[in-house]
Image (tube, rainbow, N blue to C red; front, side):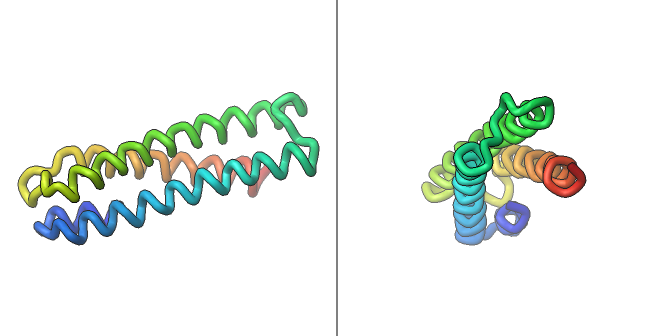
Length: 121
């Protein structure tokens, strides 16, 4: 996303679309991996939201984060559609900047969640 935003700031619409497409694919992959993680935890490890305080916190925090990633993926899909139709330029790309900052917020939250849930636990 950072690269895509830099490309449209330089007036490169093709670079913008490529960057958004890559970010969109990575976001979808993240969501599928999160669902796979849930499936493994629930079916193989018998770890659910009712597995005590840690289970409740784990599924609530990662679930809310996943919901925000889904919102970001939807935003990226809208940006990509608009970008492919040529709606953004070097001077007019406020929506790109907005999704850019939202996506970075989601990234930072994930780093904190990953460290506290998966690493430190």
